[in-house]
Amino acid sequence: RSGVPGGVRRLVWCRLLAVEKWKKMYSPQLWLRARNGQGVEMEVRKRIEKDVTRTYPGMEQFANGGLLNVLTAYAAFDPKLGYTQGMAYTAGLMLLCGMTEEEAFWGMVSLTHDDKWSMRKVWAPEIDQSVWDGIKIAVWEALSKKVPSFVEWTEADEEVPDMILLPFLPSLFCNRFSMQHAARLFDMFLYAGWQPIISLFASLVTTAWLNLPTSTPGPPRNCASLILPIMYTDCKDHASSLIRHAWRHTVNKLHPCPA
Image (cartoon, rainbow, N blue to C red):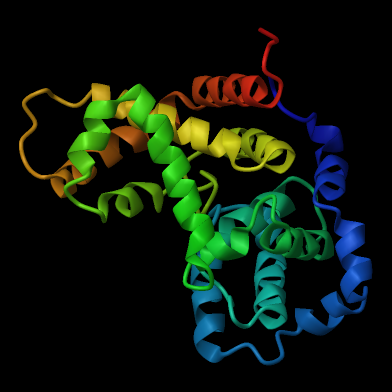
């Protein structure tokens, strides 16, 4: 229920992310070459530097520039993706939970290039829209079973799904949960892929939708601006129950009871 024990989390994450496999595949020296950021455009560097200062503010672990080093190295490794919002929270969480800069770098390589997670196509859907579209379809299928009235209402505006998903999914909820809860959800994500994220998000939307005043007027776009503050509050106040429900649902999906 508390996720992977903190004392072994680094080791478990490195194993699930196959850090050693990716290091051998690309050459162990790649990290040292990428770490200096050679070839990273100045605009990308500025975006990274700006986001680093507001990612997990006050954390002493970043005082030595560790997060900046990891993100700059990844931008050098993958210039087509470079850097987008969401990456800082994910890399930062790995560092905060004990991974070294080099391990976090290879963890980012794994997250972006392994089909289990395909984060490269989530952080930059213009590279390949199919993964992001697939996640949206899975979320809306789950919502159609929980709150069909919400799904019917949002069909009038095709931009609503992105408006509601983007504040949560690219960062894997790291920007909405405490570090403790974000780490528990990341445990689940590494083990089971997108299923726990989709389940948690569907539960979050369902609760927020049911808590909206029944007389709320306006088109779906207005609904998004009304429902998001409720979702932000629920992430803060009900993270533990949301994570527990997502895990139970994921386990049932992965290991269904025999008929």
